[in-house]
Image 1 (cartoon, protein in one colour):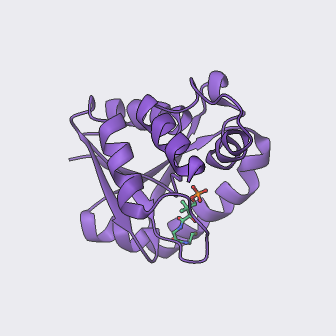
Image 2 (tube, protein in one colour):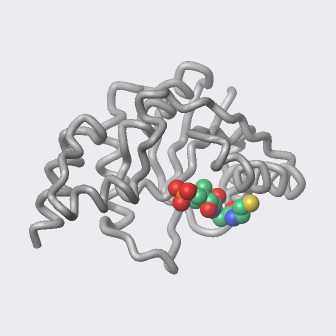
Length: 158
Ligand code: PNS
């Protein structure tokens, strides 16, 4: 069985993430979306909320699972027999750090990283920008799933 992981913070998941997850689900038998727990980052949504939002938004893909992960990504991969990490690349500016992580993960555990070019429609999109724009009342509909949009508005209104 060919398995891949799509890792990230997903605070919150965007249509750019979902595009990569959906495309990966057509290439692999099983895709695990790993929501990384990073205590040093201030997040808008809890890990459980982020997992629920991704599960709902990706429910059309029957071979996609969503789980939390703490610690090293390669340990998560080893524990689940995952052979590949799938990452979206938006621009050259993403590449340096992504290459470094890919090489580190390969050297640690022989896990391969596959880079998928982001759909140009979402090339400018990031969770951080979505949060910033939404915080100041900007329109982010079309950039995130409807459920995320609703929860984002509710959370920011608090
Ligand atoms: O969405 P992000 O925050 O850009 O995702 C980065 C992430 C979570 C994929 C990366 O930081 C990661 O893999 N973290 C897990 C810890 C780990 O394995 N670190 C070593 C990377 S070589």
